[in-house]
Length: 605
Image (cartoon, rainbow, N blue to C red; front, top):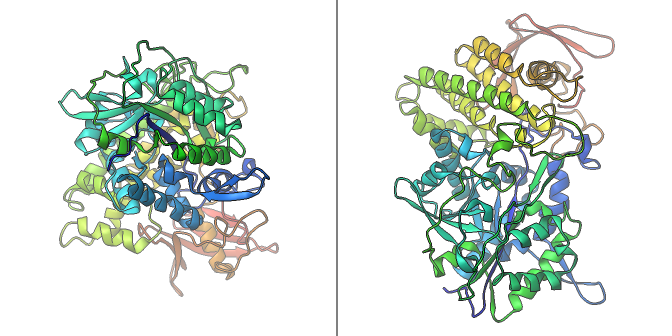
């Protein structure tokens, strides 16, 4: 069905994403003091943005609520898969509203407004072709499971793009993506999308967003006046897209990027015209208080205009396939004026431009995780022989269940891929989980901010530590890989002398002094595994009342007396009870001879 009226079309796109925050050993988000009064940043941003966006209030002249709108029903949008997993488990009403909005978009325009996203938010031009393919396939599989249809478009993290990335997109059946105007050598007229032809002959449509108007939403005053913003969007259908220098900024743990530079002349005025605005979705309510209300009022006004189509990108493309061929600025992104330098070198892009600092740590951090990933892949290929007949095919397909809390569902899925007659189901799961962590260590947020010693780096390095544990579980050379990794990390220096280099930071801040398995065992010994009350400030959704992936298998009369088993991977750690102190601390000794004094009432990390 056609969605374009006389004057042209307006599309507002929201890129909704949070860096993954779950502890990789316990699959729960630890307390984050910076998010107070909320337990963590996921809770805070959900309360300030995601829920308000799907329950936006529109007021009458007297300031009374006249209507409540799910803004996503009238938008183009994407949500990071890891964020959707958190919402599904912790805020199901918001999660269901997101899925329902896509269905309303289908009913209104014949096409849903939701786009898929590369699964772990890596900078795709900096990944190997094999990792590009897996990240894109996982994004497609996750989208299909949630939205019940195949995605037509995909959001590229940081809109980072090069020829190979679009070549893989085309090969996986993705029709379009979104780019900043400065990422194209020349822009099609009237805001129309361009057709990019890859080096192998495939094609992908690229939608350049309107730089000036998008910048006004993210960093300017657009959201202060809904009537003016609506008028600006209509005028934007005939105005140049804008390629002036932008800016970048971020809230802790939550990057928000702008567009960058340039200008284009000779924009025509013949229909069909398109004004596409694209920003971080968190702009609405989190970065800009009450921004969701301005968004809702603007959407309502646009939808009522008889000569403007408020639509989504899939619907627009169905009406008007791209015909103007375009060339990329490659590699490039929406938040780095130096291409993709922000995620691999000290390119000059940073948040605090006044404080003296260096980002020379970026290159050695990337070298360290890249070297570790290559080592993990070698272990995967070597150990998988006889376990997974098609190891890389299994990895590409693992996106169907990756990260699911349902251990039995994950194990049942892997069992189908394990060699016939093989009794190595545990090893098959461990190998695929090792590869999942090998992908997670490239999450882009670890390079976006100004210093090595940040919460985003802790998160990525914890994935590395978890991957190394799994190397040991499958019988690989964990010690050699760990030492090579730490040596490489030692070349990265924090701007804070107290933090030191990456090796020191890793050993001090990344790996818990007391393993999660020891706390699980101590709680079992104390008979408190399921009865410890949540600590102050910890919500039931993310606090210790929630179960962990570990279970205790007691072996009375045998040594070790306690075995802590991972429900998904089957990993086992044995513990012996040594003593209990007068203050209630439990002394345990694991099957390697390491001793831990554990307070069984301590909150989960």
